[in-house]
Length: 254
Image (cartoon, rainbow, N blue to C red; front, side, top):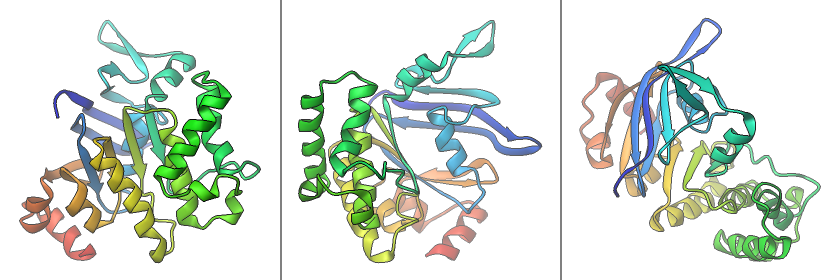
């Protein structure tokens, strides 16, 4: 793990008068898996959405893969990039949401091939071959021609992971990818994520899945009230938390 894939510096975000992110600083190295924990409303999802510029920041800077995300800097001020340039930057980042957001009128395979064809200009045959490989990778080779309503929630989420991977991202963001799933379906999604981590994918994961964080993450982070209060290797973070809020939070979820 060498240079940083994500560099966030003093990131600020407001929703009207609500101060959601209060000077967030975080580095994520290439090949690193960082799990962000925190209570509902702590700013985790907002921060994740700021990383790929789905939310615009109100202060600070975020660099992804060495590029200032969503902006150019002129005379010390941020000027927003044109949408086509932001889209190119965003194409390097895969994101998996709580809800699967699959196109209901398309099969699993069709859901996976669309973005490479229309965003990257990949040949349809090559995109379909790659999509089939990715569906096999997440354990859904036999579901290529099945529509989303015929799939379980866990299967739909794995299609969503394959769809994100089809863009060959340098970074994967996961926003509570198992929170909408029945408990018995959580494991199959976490297995797919674990495999990605083992292959060296850089990942930032917002989740309450403590077992995944303990076993897979290189670093665990606690966010509270829009700020990072504590971070460290999972063994230390979960066994010997230092901040009182971390101790309180972990005692409520463990």
